[in-house]
Length: 79
Image (cartoon, rainbow, N blue to C red; front, side, top):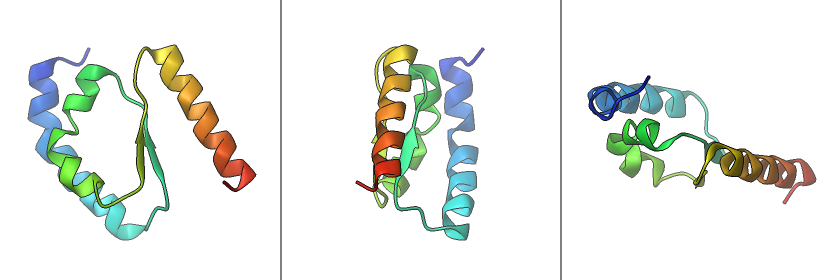
């Protein structure tokens, strides 16, 4: 189980890994679907992600999955 403390510990590592991933490939859009505690782990990556077209899921897991479905459907339709 992710704790707030562990998410904060991982934040720097996640930022470095995310920088590497984003250097390898240029993404047109990114959808991030994480729970509240996992989102804390992206705290140090906010400035980096501001350079990309990022959509964040919010709410309970079912709501976030619905948002992801809408996002994927829009991509498939070419919007």
